[in-house]
Amino acid sequence: MWRWYELLPVLDQENRIFLGEGDTPLLSLPRLGKELGLTRLYAKDESINPTGSFKARGLAAAVSKAKELGIEKVIIPTAGNAGGAMAAYAARAGLRAHIFMPKDTPFANIEESRMAGAEVTLVDGIISDAARLASEKAQAEGWFDLSTFKEPYRVEGKKVMGYELAESFGWQLPDVIIYPTGGGTGLVGMWKAFAELETLGWLEDQKRPRMVSVQADGCAPVVRAFEKGASFCDFWPNAHTIASGLRVPKSFADHLILQDLYESEGTAVSVSDEAIIEAQHQMGNMEGIFAAPEGAATLSALKELVKQGWVHPEERIVLFNTGSGLKYLNNPE
Image (cartoon, rainbow, N blue to C red; front, side, top):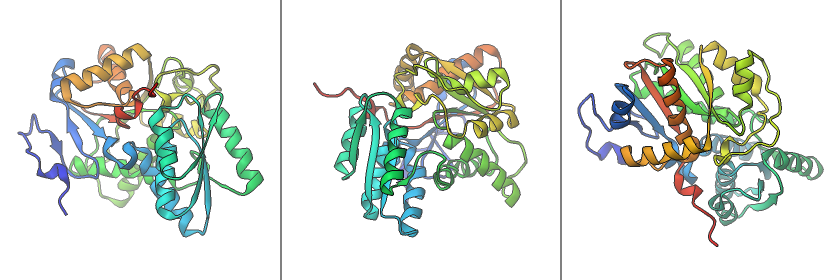
C-alpha cells in the first residue's frame, strides 16, 4: 500500500520535501532553514492524523486497550484535540464517551466530539477544572478515566512518533527535538521510545536528541521549574494563551517531563502569544504549513535558541507541528 506522500516528487538531498518513512511525513523546511541559518531543519507534521492532531496517537492505543479489557464507557478532560480523538475512536469501538472541556475550547473540537456521539460538558474555567469534574463523575458513576498519564497506554501510542523519527533518519536520531508541552505525553513517550530502540540495538549509534519543551508565556510551569532545577512543577495560576493545548497549569507527570529534559541536556522555552501568531503566519507563508498555535510555538522557540547560540547551523533539528490550524478557526457568530 503506497502512502499518498510517497507518490509526490522528492527533491535532491539538500532540499527534499519528504524524508524517509513513517505514518506522518517528516517535512524538510528549506526556506525557514535558510532564513534562520540552519541547513537541516525539519517538521514532523502530525496534522494529517485522524481528527487532525497528534492526540490520535495516544487515544488510538488507549481506547483500543479499553475495548480489549471490556470497558464500556470512557471519560476524559481535554483542552480540545484529545476530546475529538477519544470521541472518534470510542465511536469506532462502540464505547460510550463523555468529555469535559472548557467553554472557550475551539469550536471545531466541540463539534467533532458531538458529531462522533460523545456527550460533551462545557466547563467554566480551564482544563484543570474540567479534570476535577471528570474525575468526580468517573468515581461516582464508574466511567474509565483516560486522562493524561492516569492510564498506561496513551504514552505507548505517542512513543511511536519516536520510532518514526528514527526510521526516517535511517535509524539515527536528530540532534534536537522541539516539542510543544502541555500534558507532555509525547515528550515522555518519545524519550521512552529512544531508550527502547537503543536496547533493541536498532540505532546506528547511541547519541540521543536534546529535548526542548516549549510553553506559552501565560502558562509555563515546566519552564519555570526547569530554570530552578526543580524536580516538580508548581501549579500555574491564571493560565492563559491562545494555544489551548498549552494551557495546562500543571501536568500530572511533571517530574517525568523534567527528568527527560535534564537527561537529554535539553532546555525549556516560553514564547508570547504574539510570537506564536507571527510564527504561524511565517510557517504558512514560507513552507505552506497551516500549523496549530502549539506547533507554531516551536518555531518561535527555535528563533530564541538560534539567538542564544544553543543550536548550531549543521544540526538536524525537528519541530513538531501537533495539529492543524484549521481546528482553531473562530467559532461562527
